[in-house]
Image (tube, rainbow, N blue to C red):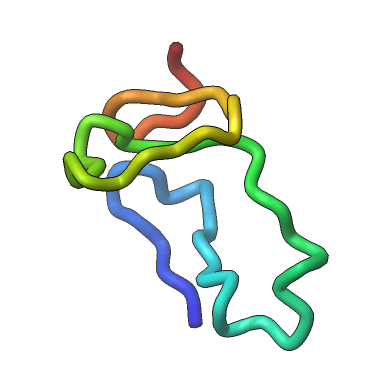
Length: 57
């Protein structure tokens, strides 16, 4: 499964869980970090981006 956002039409988003070998696709950053639920604690030290545009710091 995948989707393309109107705001970022040049990027295709894929759901890792829909892939046959999801372990081959490790995350590289967290996008829209401000939407994270308060109980979710991420300790992976990956970069975070606020808002939908992952290209901006």
